[in-house]
Amino acid sequence: MISEIRKHIKDSIKACSSKYIMIDNPFHKDEDLVGTKANYQYAVGFGPSVKLIDDELGNVQQIPVNLKTYRQGARDKNADFDEGFEEALIIKDLILDRSAINSKEYIKGMTSSNVNPGEVLDSQDIYSYETNFIFTISYGIGE
Image (cartoon, rainbow, N blue to C red; front, side, top):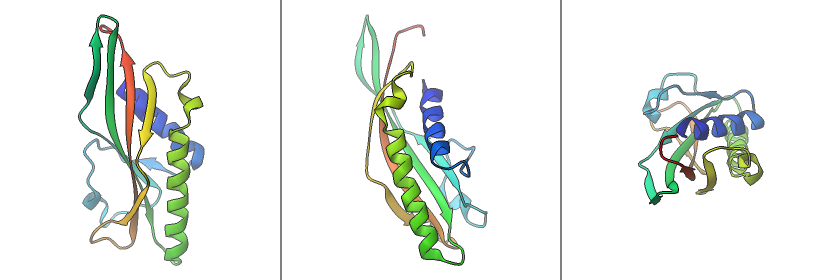
């Protein structure tokens, strides 16, 4: 279930740009990026689930997911920031594409916040673009 969400996000990001690499840490912190080459990286974090339905037919839960993409400012900081923001907007729309979940086993829907741009504190121009999603999943007991 959770791996299906992570794969859906990864596939959506790759559809936007194959340059992005996932940060392999489920409890990633922005400050871990300071002093690294953070260009074209992203982190996926999961929050506590909320049970909506629990009966003999199965379970429906909502899973909050935080997605952050990162871009490193270089010579033209405004262009790098703008490109990162544009890609974050496209990635959000690709993740929310309802047709992409038609074949999913567990994901039944998703919503999101807006894309929130920022700069990683104490960094050398590492820009972050944060979006919060809520995935609705459905599964039967014993699956």
